[in-house]
Length: 328
Image 1 (cartoon, helix red, strand yellow):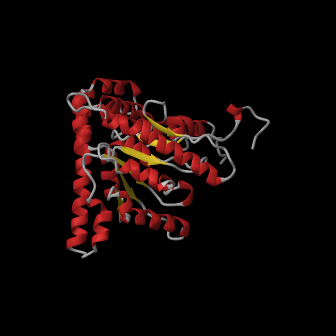
Image 2 (tube, one colour):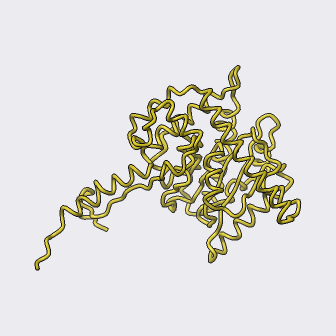
Image 3 (tube, rainbow, N blue to C red):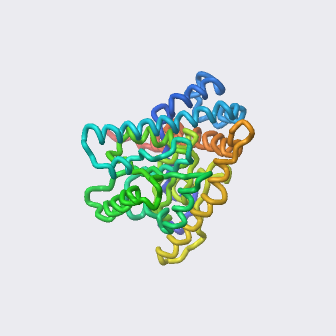
């Protein structure tokens, strides 16, 4: 829009979104932070230096917290399904789709957001047979938990939602896919705190930010995402995983195929092995290193505290200084 101006003189800027850490952090994790970072860690949440102490948190303590958070999620899902069965008298398929067959010890991938076309909620189902092999492994099972809603006027989004729900009913996947209905903030808290991975696979460059991934990452749920939105800024090659099919083809089908293949490869070769590789004490050291790096790098940089400060420093204060007095 201003090709004749150097970048520093272009009158358009940005401030990346952040999430309200006190609202979204799990109480068990907050207690761990208070123990190892200091009781005033929330007051210093936007200071990257304080988060370096997280690297010294014993793996055993962090793993115990992460195990508890995943189990809280499954207790929530099962009680919710029990209520559907006992009170609402729903049929058996809906009870299964609600997650009653999920394994509380298995690697759990969460996908929860508005269902719409550009977010490609069905990308992971591009090759059903390959996905089924990943999910149904006897020794290293993986499971998917979906939640979300579509805009009332978004028919494409509604169709995606319906298709994903049908996948949760498909015996091909052995009950390892769940769809949590009536998605709201209460459901969101359990998901961003209790899953092991947060999946985000929009079509570049259409993702504006993607704050659900920030909420998950500060809870030790590493991001698995396309390099778009906040992840283009946040990914450092150690704090999660980048889905990159390497295709710039103008044909969406070609790009989707490449990205889906990259997603499957990451799961098969990197993510699943890291989660299930345990030492003699049953601790996944490599996995916990990613969790620590996720929290350490995301919490200070993508907090609402940092965001508001940046608005003041970069936008509000300069605007105030440049105000021209009004003649009276």
